Image 1 (cartoon, rainbow over the protein chains, first blue to last red):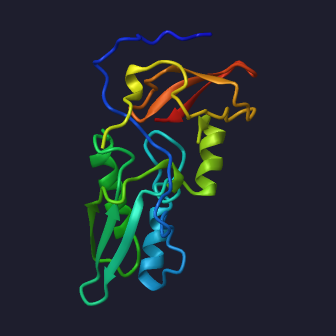
Image 2: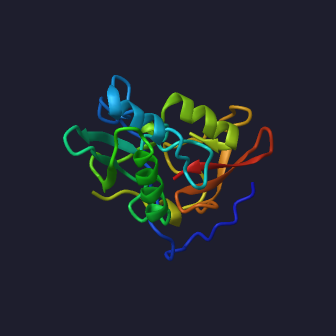
Length: 138
Length: 56
């Protein structure tokens, strides 16, 4: 059995991903969205995680999309798979730029949310298929 | 809230069996708590003898 990890290591970062029930309304995929908000969801579905060939929507990272009809200002609520994610700035920028490509959006901002906590249960079925194909167990 | 720190233990963590993404087998071991990304760990499938990754 190829186990070569140190047994007494204490220098590693905390990276626990408990499985468990995710709140019923998650993951949010934009189903039922209309108008400009539906366009924003479609644009976000094109944003891939920088390390895995799966979109941030299928990972369950998008917690909400709201477009103010008067100002055409878009707010995207985004979470990360863990709070210390080194791709945070990259992902936030990618998501903001994608949201701004939607017709009817003048400018967009991305707000990070850590509640409810992201779990692997929030990965959509399509996301699971993409991840398995990539060689990642979910 | 305290949870086991998976990075300080070896083997498959209690209660969590990783399913091989290639052959579906659950006869797998956690090879290393760190994968190519900070959010992933390395596992090994004893059946199809392939390494794979898992969240966490």
